[in-house]
Length: 273
Image 1 (tube, rainbow, N blue to C red):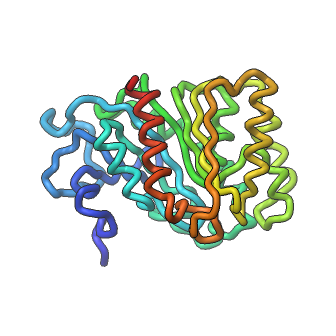
Image 2: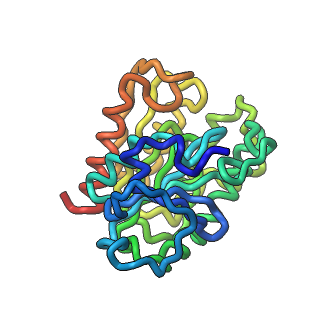
């Protein structure tokens, strides 16, 4: 049976721990974790101080449908090298809580809704550890994970920045796709629930040719923020043809550029330069 972390590059595995926060499986990659080559599972918060290091700013990251929290370790390594921790969680029905039914496209908004509801519990659980500076937190995700992030940002929160990829804050643009569920979409649609939106720095990356999540939906969402005076700290960068599958995930030949942009953005807004 594969061991935890077998799919992670050694440089990420050395800085990683597997945890369960409020029932949600999480991969924690931290700049101060001991570089001893060991990957621990469900370590208690009463670790020796030599393993704690300084509390780090942290990104809560959520992946897309059908993949897992371990996806895209290059993102986690860049952030760790920049002094920022990542808590990457499994969406409902994914990874360590696998449920094939929940990975079907018509269940996407159900997964988004459940994940958005779980975020506060995860943040409360990580507050009980000594690893993170909870005054410097960011939230983000790609595709379905990005939708969960935007849904959560429509309610009062303490996040200092957000970064999303290949996602949308205007669900109406997904009407033609199997994921669209009218009642749930109306209840969750970020563009229709901006009364509590706080103007924090927001980085949006998207493929112009995205075949699964139309870039026009995200453009409309940004315009809605602008109309309400909430977009002064919003950066949206669009890529042309990248060679990514369905031009939807990973940004293909621009993958490194996307990761570098996100890292620089989070360094600026979580570390101050």
